[in-house]
Length: 78
Image 1 (tube, rainbow, N blue to C red):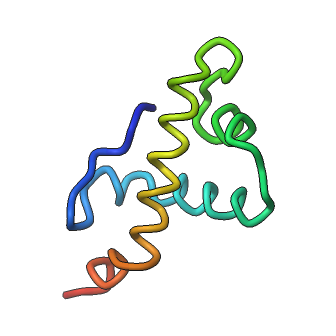
Image 2 (tube, rainbow, N blue to C red):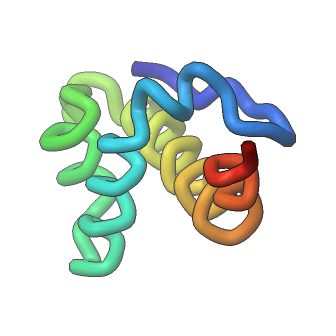
C-alpha cells in the first residue's frame, strides 16, 4: 500500500479499506508508533522502507481523520 488517493468525497478505495482506517484510528488511540502501524496494518517493513512506511501511514492517518471529521456525512448519504 502506498499513499491514499485523495478526494473531497468517499472513494472506492475508502470503501474497500474502511477496516484499515479503523485499525489505524485504533492504533493511534493506543499511541502506537508509525513503524508498528506500517508493519502490522499495512505490511510495510519500516526498517527496509522507512520513507515509504512513514508516508503510507501518515496518508492513511490523514484520510481516516478526514473520514471521521468530514467524510462521514458522505458515508450515510442516500
